[in-house]
Image 1 (cartoon, rainbow, N blue to C red):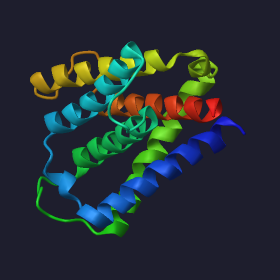
Image 2: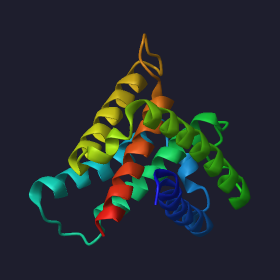
Image 3: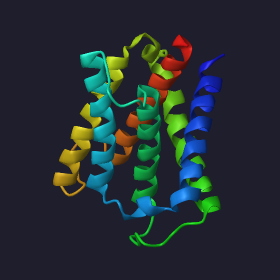
Image 4: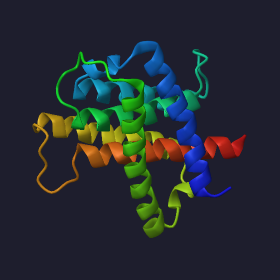
Length: 179
């Protein structure tokens, strides 16, 4: 199976969870402010790093579940950046599904472009590197938020979220390959 099929398989699983949770909870995530989304992803990435460093875990949720959560929170962040500031408006499931697909389509396009230039170097990276890179991107986003969303020469928050989602997808592909 090639990267495209693996990527789509991972995204299909992530979207399935996302839509089911939307049916259960509505779009309660709309109330999350930018820093809260960063913190939700941070908690997941930090847990992955702790499990990697300690070599054991006490909560049964696996690392794959945390990476899937990172994918979905990354998509939430990108959706939130474009929606009007009405956190209590519940969006219909069909709208959420469409917005999810739009963001993933963009993220996937970026991945294809980078894969072309980097020659799928991610396949030789470690799970530890994916966790560390996600944490690095989150710290960058926190700094951009402190800078009121402005950067001088660096990529913005959206580009960092795109990379976070792609790192999490790559980690999930690798986990699937090891099974």
